[in-house]
Amino acid sequence: MKQTKIFHYGFAILLAVAAVACPGAIQTANGQAAKTEVKTASTRSSQGGRDPFKKYEPPRVVVKSGAVVSAPSIQERIEQYKAQKLAAMNARVTAPKPVTAFLLSEVQVVGISRSPRGYAAIVEATPIKLAYVIYPGERFYDGQLVAIEDNRLIFRRETVYADGRRERAVEMKPLRKATPVSSLATATGPSAPANTEDAERQKLADKPTADKP
Image 1 (tube, one colour):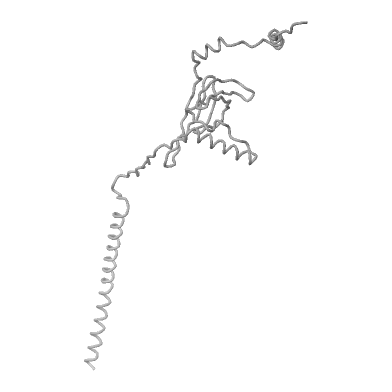
Image 2 (cartoon, helix red, strand yellow; image 1 turned 90 degrees about the horizontal axis):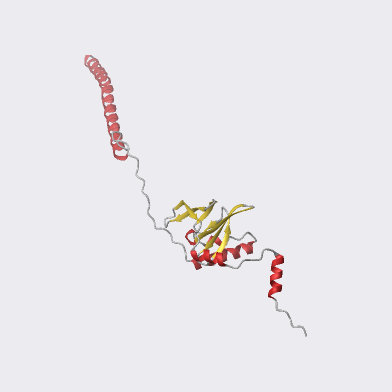
């Protein structure tokens, strides 16, 4: 009986000692796990993210360089205009103006005048030597007429690059200066009759008279 009581007392003491020792072991294990997680998180943040102690530098913007897309030849542009005009006629819509086939570099300003619609300009397409009357808003192959002033035209030129970028810039065209040949032709050219009566008299004077029998 005494041995049994001693055995029970000893077992109870062991259980009490184990109960006191287990919380310390659990806290130690939890502390080690927390340290491991903090170390792992700090390692990941330093490897995959930005260093918090380094000065912020914005990312560099890489500008893509591309070549300028050259315009087709004048004949190809005229053929394109004819096709567009035919398609517009078949669809019964307003056909594009002929100046849409010309580049701004192929246009010269011949004159500027005021019309009921406002300012109008007379330009000459140098490749075909034909003149057209244009108004603000008229489109060309590589730009658009923005405004007409007393002695110049203001255009918006559009440049297209091979990578798809489009750049717009303002371009101004002054009146074409008169050449000595054109001035001489204007000064020595035949003068028109002042009115209808003078024209009729001139015709009668130039008409040969028949001899009377």
